[in-house]
Amino acid sequence: MKTTLDSIQARESQYVLHTYRRQPVAFVRGEGPRLYDVDGREYLDFVSGIGVASLGHAHPGLAAAVADQAATLLHTSNLYYHPFQAEAAARLSTLSGLSRAFFCNSGTEANEACLKFARRFWHTQGVSNRTSFVAIEQSFAGRTMGALSVTWDEHYRTPFEPLLGPVTFVDPNSPEALFAAVNDRTAAVIAEPIRGEGGIRPLPRAFSDAIAEVCRRTGTLLIADEIQTGLGRTGHPFHFQALGWNPDLVSVGKALGSGIPVGAALISERVAKTISAGDHGTTYGGNLLATRAATFFLEELMDRGLLDHVRSVGDHLERRLRTLALKHPVVLEARGAGLMRGVELRVDATPAVDLARERGLLVNRTNEKVVRLLPPLTITAAELDAGIDILDAVLAEVPAEVHA
Ligand SMILES: Cc1ncc(COP(=O)(O)O)c(C=O)c1O
Image (tube, rainbow, N blue to C red; front, side):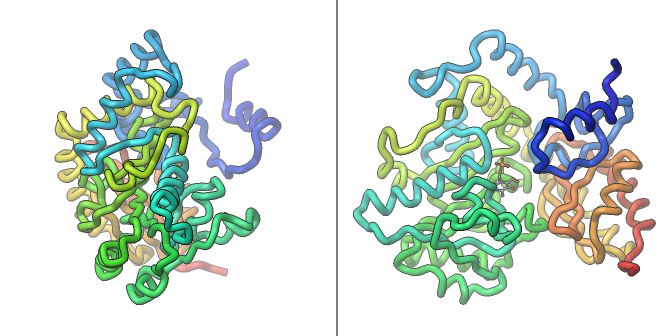
């Protein structure tokens, strides 16, 4: 029997837990920034699996490295050494300036590790009451109990309370609120340099400076959640570098494996010194396959000009989006950095996302009214133009007002 969208949907609705509202399309193949569905229709992918397919789809070099590793040795656990963990960790250290890496399997796990390491830091020093966290409104850190506790959206949190506490969420328009929230019980401030799921919202400069200042002044640890912003996405190795932050912990994921699941917590020396064998662990984390893929991605980023490429095409994308924002009354604002962009509409973004998909462009709705663009880091200016031309036509057709 031929596999069709209908047959896939029918089996999923019977057997897969209904935690996702999927769009009506099933993909079977990809090449660079393009995806092909079960019927052979081509799409330009400006979602990249939510910022994951950093090298595009079916990258020949990554495919060769992964196939070679699969045919050689996939996994041995953290009971033994292998060559690729140290290789990927050394590159992450060079890129971030933090001295060590702990590998895990997702962004959420990286944040979990950072939260634990922050508490461990204070515990090791005998400061047993510095256990609370300060997070930012509209933040997203993941869905496990710890990461969920520092995620802003109440819809995600409320059904699962009580969560890890205490956590104080601060309005990023109020540096004063941050200064008031950080006290002698705060283990760490956790912040995304640009809130991704929250609608591609850069932190106001005064607030971002306040984070750096309050952490420096009080010795509070800073966790930079760079799961979406990090590893070249914004045109910087890490976006905290553009903000002048000096974090003790940095969480990464998404782009690192370009589709092979891998995350990492990056750790400053002063925190690393407080952590001992047995404090944290994972069976899969940092296995040969994952860290070989991560190493390949990091080589592309650091040695083969990918970062410069993102800066140049990111500027091009910004110019195109600025023009769209001026042209279409439905657009409230275009914002972001590098290849991490959001176009906030005056209306719900669902019709625009659906229409774009029907025309062969994949974009993502986040925070209700925001069309999010996270194309592969390898995308060319011509490919960006092809996608933005589709978005341009779509925005001309989306009503600028909600009609009752
Ligand atoms: C900023 C940020 N933190 C954490 C996460 C969670 O990462 P993952 O879904 O890989 O567990 C995400 C995912 O969207 C994210 O964007």
